Length: 283
Ligand code: PMP
Image (tube, rainbow, N blue to C red; front, side, top):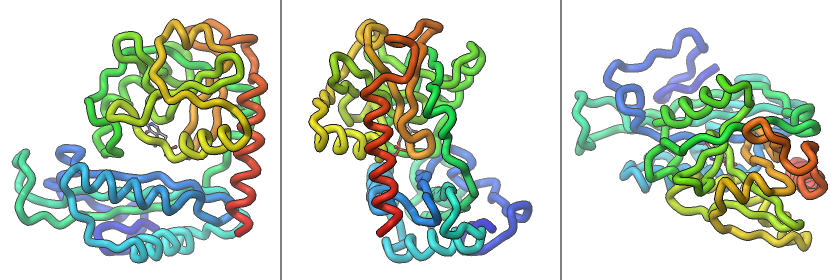
């Protein structure tokens, strides 16, 4: 079951208005939330980011945090996601329906849509690592907003796929930013390096959890921009996201990263992350 603009509908019955601004312009925002064993992980952080994205695009959300939490729980219930299930929850808000002009209509009524699906964790890939391809970051300059406008991400991801890699690592003039739908970390001499959370990256919720876990466990974290040359010399590289968790990248542009296997710092962080998930779903 989907929730679309205030109604519950079956998947095949959902309809989009031809002049919905999300559909016409990508004018809207979204969140993807992880569900572990039937419990939402980091829900408050996702809500906070959704409200922030709305503010940044000058859209006022008419729903309270409580109403959105109720909706999220209903989405799980109606899609039979119970306490043994791993799943994802998708929420998007379009600016709504109005005649197709670019400027923001004075009267707009946001349209919310949500669904929840069973989704297994990528455990096998997390163990063996994935490959990535470097490509120029062709996206806009407000990557901090989680907008529906994802064509840049679509094209760079496809570029990586066409080259036989699983993901793309983006750089602006040789400065590494993030991946197509994940944040990126490099490990050098036991310390973590990742792009600062400014307008050039999405401030990932998994990124923040990993930074906090690292610091709590004596691993130095440098939130500073680094070059593609630094990346190629890194001992380990991994990406982080809600769905990919901590995903080691063991090859970049066809060359092995470090030993070409999942390194000790990545392994340690995966272990700490696992404990964090377990502690969160037990509460
Ligand atoms: N960067 C981009 C561009 C993304 O699309 C995502 C996934 N939403 C992330 C980073 C990771 O964010 P999170 O950890 O909150 O899923």
